[in-house]
Length: 242
Length: 263
View (tube, each protein chain N blue to C red):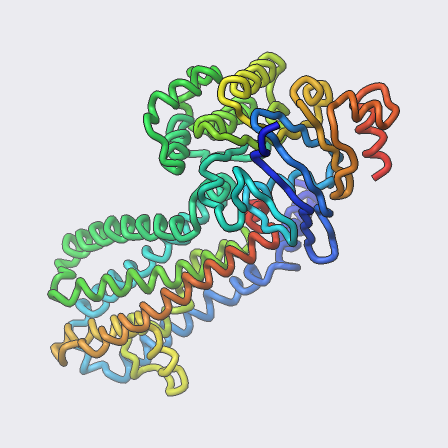
């Protein structure tokens, strides 16, 4: 297998006495979708924030495309993007204005064509001129996803990207992700509490519990390792232990 | 009307004061500043009543220049608050944007606001009071530039505090600059200040600009020395504040405050 696009080595994050992430290591390969599972407080979001350079690790290393995040932040973040159901975008700007700002921030060429393209893919045409504060939560999620896809990242971090979407749109988003994965070799780190979605989407899954990585493998391997019938049972078992 | 519902709301607001120093300070802050500012103005008028030439010229000029400093500071701080209110900081700082680029953008916004405010205030002063700010002459340009930079210094300082202490410190965006007003000697000369406060005013670049303005308007000499002090102090403080902003940014990243600052 080719060398990983993301490599995390013994990553630790402490806030005072509390250890949010406790020595996790994992890799993400080109074109791979890696699912990150874990109960609330397991360290998923803190890990994602460290991968985005928003939180400094206490120790350990994060490298992407062979470069260390701490010393090559600008070059790495140019090729990375993220989306979260819980994130927000400037509320007084229209969908299109928001996307223009993102495009400028990343210095994209041929902006209008790219915006038209993503607006069409995510079926945002009917609200592209609406201000963000007037969007429904599902439309806001699509805007957040559009922002992430617009910059044509090589790695995409998605934090529960389909949590507020209706099943039809959620299905289309998953299809789009798979298309991008196949067409451009997009690598994705994906968190979700929807176990079926996790099984459907992820090539591999890592399971975090109390800041530690407790399991890694395909969905089938993890289910078999914990002697459960499906991923949801594994989740319940580990969540109740923590 | 139900008393328990009214008291519930009263308690909801009182609870805010239990752990919020900025909110408690605000109760005492404005009355204190009003007393200090107007007290010094009263002293000035009482002491130099017969020697204050062109009263309107002094006060309107001072008012317009003070607003330039205020808007310059607001240009920096409000731009940051806009990102905080829309919970957009995460989007910005997870992009290739550098903190220094963010600061540069807020400085451009600050210049935009200063230009707009100057035009409106200059026009209103001319229409309502037949007053032209250009009476200050060519000195106006270095005065304004220095006040803009002083506004940046206070703006970057305030922004760092808001980034560090979060939304409860956002009241500083409007109040911090007024802490500098008494020692900026906007409406009265530095002579009016008590002896112990004069050295503090002397290291405030804005005080030198307003002293210089009064010097030009009263034809009592060229304000070269005051301008020199203002430029030197501004450059020193601006460099220090930018360094402090970067340090605060690193601290916030380390403590995970950057992702929580808007919550």
